[in-house]
Image 1 (spheres, rainbow, N blue to C red):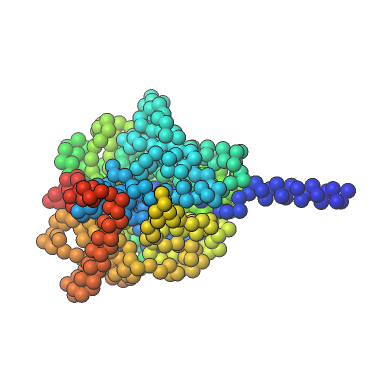
Image 2: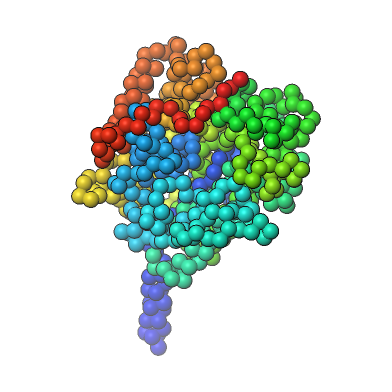
Length: 554
């Protein structure tokens, strides 16, 4: 009898083991236009208990970077290459590049690298990568390609097949829809593929414009921001210092730097409450203060709701007993945005802020606060445009809890990090030809020890804004600056000055020249890589400047 019981227990144990993947699962959650300081665990006042909890029991990276824009960031995240290397952003005198360009055939996506290990891959949310989702290796996908309404998307797809538009009379909130699909895929995985590991890529559109949120979520923050962005920015900075996140000063707001693109009719459509400069709060009229406070309340509500939906996703992982052996990575595609525009169905001034008939953007004042303590915003490659939170949580793989990691990292690192964590490797050949080496580094060593990831440099170029970081030295240039030295490089020692307040370029011309040469060398190498599979007449499109007209900061 004992032998029979023992055999039965052995069979049950074996069946349980067979149903539990030995490789870790992976969940990558990407926010859209989230500021560095928006989360509670990065100094913000917005309630984000789920992400704060993941940070408390995992790691927070303090110097993690994106590309300053949505589609280049997504290319970097899913391929492991800089977007320019795979033609997903523009190079001077390079091939056609950007949001409409096509990757080289060798630039495969992460799901294809995971498939040989038995992974099933699921996508939910924003795409903004060239090619179809299932052709890129995903097994299931919900893709949102209409970004003008959070309540009634008209252009969205499931498994690359177009879905009926959402009826505005029966709205569904997009953030919840994205989470619903991600959860549905995991539920199906449990029933049909429990013996296989999974990769879930959840790309929220929050808190990207238009600022749309549920009325009950907005009510929670309705009076939260009447003190203004000057006070909110100072409070966030003080919390960041007390957390040990940063030890730099608070950058001075640049009053003459407004939105990166010119939409002169936007201020007319939005009314007298809108303002296109980060002026001191006390200088705003009462009408402007009310309007601006209402906008930030909607932004906060969007972040709050995203955190709640992530909470539902976490609960699903717990329910399927996958939470302990799932590597969760959370970050944003760029910094908060200073853009001001009106798209879609326009803006109804009489409608409640944040409701479907409105079209509001965060704008320069609040994006400046969201990116505390850094300078500039989305599209610029100063720290405010490219710095993002990165939370890493994996109970079975990360012993540290609540610790900070100061290793500089970039979205190009996520592919090698994930492959390292799951025991995989990059695709080395395609169509009989070697795939070029990718620039990213695995962050897995940093899971155990701070400052354990060595690298030569990090590089940026977007809309003629350019930068390079070597160690703590950063060389950066902003296109079309509203200052006399618009074409000049700026030099900062980020070890002492992450806020980029003390430009050392004039004092250290040799260092400027050294980093300038390295930036140029890397750019030329990227151009060779991006064009190596092209015919001679395709190698240069003549693109040297952004296709969209830059705003005049005046």
